[in-house]
Every structure is written in structure tokens, then in C-alpha cells.
Image (cartoon, helix red, strand yellow):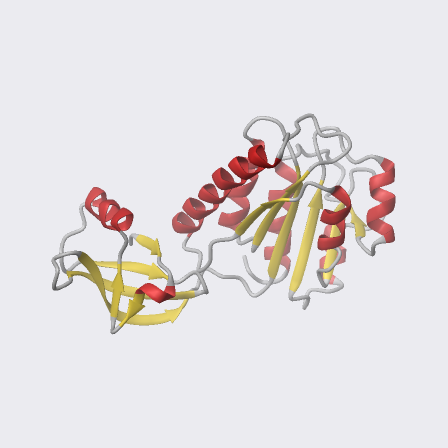
Length: 245
């Protein structure tokens, strides 16, 4: 069923009022009057609507059923992924949204190959990333549009990640605590952050800072994963071990 995200302020009187872009999309999908589609208010509520027209002749949705979105997990997982080269961050965003991440944060690290120079460039990049999050949320039946941020300071990224009930720092040289055991020891946590590094791995000073801030250094196993694979693997583990997969 076609899915659209519409502001709650555009839904009243039993009608979901569509923007011109959404009406155009409906025409592209060739939906016919009387057919049903889903509208989400971005706060976890789904509205089943029947395609109709307003008195002015514009396409709209007649709300016939409201229910909580089944696409939202019971745990809030925040992804913190180091800035990667090419379109690897786009892949991370798309797949982590599909898997159920609540938010995705991209940050620079000491060994990052790529850099974003200036606020204008960062804003342009973030705008594109947010569009990818929107499309992935639509495709996967999410009840929210996960927010994507670029955090320009590593220290700030660590401080934000450390605020989660279960803050996990994925370190390739960790050989004691597995992500499995860390999550199972606190599987009732309502918020989990997963912090992953760049192509060249974390600098030792970055690992030290993260641990000092209260993050748990964990391993994903004996294999070294690519920088775009690690966040997806961590989100999958979090969803599986908390009963959301």
C-alpha cells in the first residue's frame, strides 16, 4: 500500500489534506479514487485513507482507520557513524532506517578519509541524507522519519552517544566484551547508541575518550567489517536481541 508522511496539522475533520507534491506522486502511482493508501503523521500513527476529492476538486484522503504504526521498534537506537568516502554514508542511512534506527548521526574522526568543508557543504549534504531517510522510511513502513545530523565535532558526538542507556562503542581491537553480551546484560534498555569508526579505524585517543565518557567498548566478532557494514550489523544485533526482529 502506498505510504505518505503528512504533518498532523494537515489532518482534521476526518480528511488528510495532501500537498501538491503528494498529489503528483499519487498520480504517478496511478491510484484511483476510492482506492486506499496509508498516511503517517511522523509521530508513530498510521491513518488508512480512501482517495477522494475536496470540494475544490483537489485529491485528498478520507480517513477510515487510525492505529499505531507497527513499523516502530520498542527500543530507540541511535547510530553514530564516522564520515566515509563516496556514497557509503548514504548506504548506512538507508539501511539503518529500514532496520529501525531512530536517528543517524554522521561525524568526523581522526582517520576519516573524507572531510566536509564549511557549514554550507554540511547543510547540503545533510539535506540529501534526510531525503534518503524519508524514502527509506516510506519504503520500510516506518512510523517516523528518522532524523539525520552531521555533528562536526568528535567530542560532541561522543557526549551525545554516551547519553543513551546503553552506549556501545564498536572497537576493532576489543577482545573481551561482545555486542551480544553487552545488550543481553541490559536488554531492557529503552535507548541504545552504536558508535562506529571510519575506514582506518579509531585513533587510540578517541577510544580512550569514549570509555572515559562512559561508553562500553564492544566487539562485533573476529572479522573486520567495512565501515558501512558495522553500523548495519550493530543495529541488526540491537533489534534482534531486544525482540524487535
